[in-house]
Each structure stands twice: as C-alpha cells, then as structure tokens.
Image (cartoon, rainbow, N blue to C red; front, side, top):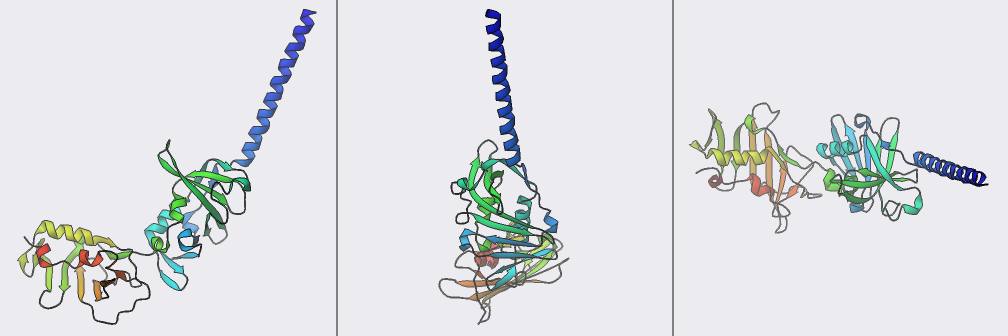
Length: 310
C-alpha cells in the first residue's frame, strides 16, 4: 500500500514538473515572438532624405535632403543649408539599433511611454527603395550603463522597445539644431592676412611674416593672436535672424586670406536696432544672418588692436 502511494506521489510530481516546463516553454516562445533585439539597422550611406516632426515645432515637418556630400534643409518657406555634423550624428544614432528590453507589447502601454500619436515624435529615413518610419517616446537614464535610454516603435507596429541612446531628446530639438551654424571655418595655420575694416581710423591689418604676426607692421602678442585665431577656426552661431535683407553698408568687416583656401573669408556686420544690435553675415554661410543681440558673435570676431598686442 505504501509502495503504491509513493508511486502515485512520484507520478504527480513528474506531472507537475512537466506542466511547469511546458508553461515555461510557452512563455519563452511568446517572448521570443514579441521581442526583437535587432530593432533597426539603417545603412546611413543609402539615406537620401530625413523627415522629422518635433514637438518644439508643434509637429511641423522638417525636411532634410542629401545633396552630394552635403545636406539641405527645408521648413515651410525656408530653404537653407543643414548642419552636416548634426545630420551625421543623427544617422549614426540609428545605425544598428538594438533593443534592451520590451517596453510594451501593445497600445495599452503607449500613453505611459509617451509614444502615441499625440505625445510621441515621428521620424522617417527614406532610401531609394525603403522608408524607415519610427515613433520616439519617453526618455530615461540608465544608471547601470550610465547612458540615456529612449523608447521607440515602428509606426506600423504596436510593440515598444527600450533602446540605448538619446534619440528621444535629440528628436525634440527645434529647427535651429539642424541648420548650418558656421560663421567661420578654416585652418589658422594656413591664414596669412586678416584685414579689419572699422569706422573712422580704427582699421588695421594683421599679417604673418616669417611665422611672426605683425599688426600694422608692429609685432603682435603671439599668445593673444593664437587664442583669437583658435576661436575663429570653428566659429558657429545659432542666433539666426529670419527674413533679413541688408539695407545699409556694413559697419565692420573682416577679410581672412591664406594658403590652401579657395577664396577669402569675408564677414560683415550691419547696423541694427537696439534689440539686434548688429547683424552678422559670412560668405561661408550665405543663407544665414546672425543677431549680436541674442549672442556675442560680433564681439568674438571684430576685436580691437588692444586685444592683439602687449
């Protein structure tokens, strides 16, 4: 009797274990069918258009088109050059995107993850034969990896995935994030002459002779000149002025000449009202005008003699 009882218990235990194993296998299969680690793998070289609908611009479309090695931007009636570095960084963020975890299986989790049509931010990458269409949602910080974590989904699908990166923050920046911000770009080691044209008799010339910078023929302070030229090498500004057309002669101008550059760099500063103060324009970014009142771009460019000599 005891032997029969023990056999029944053993069979019952085996049955329970088999049931647990079957349930585990079912759940595993279900997860495998839902979770896809390789979320997206975009060949950045094949993308010829990017469409962004950021909250900062109330969901209005920002269109970025490839033009040879450069990118162009279109927003409403504005057509201008895009910031190539910003676009390259954007593309790099979406190359080989891998999911860390499943954020939500269906629409019931969209609102909490801010990834529905109202709270989310849409972005499209267009190639010759395919369009990648994503919705980005909530951003959080992953303490274990010390990196940002964004929630993303394919717009045609319901599952939401957590991926490593700052895409959710990046997508909600405004138009100026993607505009070309260059005022001056060059290599100071190639520059040989800088001509400053100012009102009255305050104009001067800074030129290099035998690796020595001279200001109107007098030796300049090498440390001050080097610091100044370093500032000019990669000078950018985001204080754009829209719809501006010069209606007066420039108050200040700077012309930079040098070796190994196709043309001289010309920067002009036009008079403006008490808010804008000065409007700055560079021939290295013909579509853009910049406000001194919302930045300090003119003060960085149009220095006085005292800032370059002992």
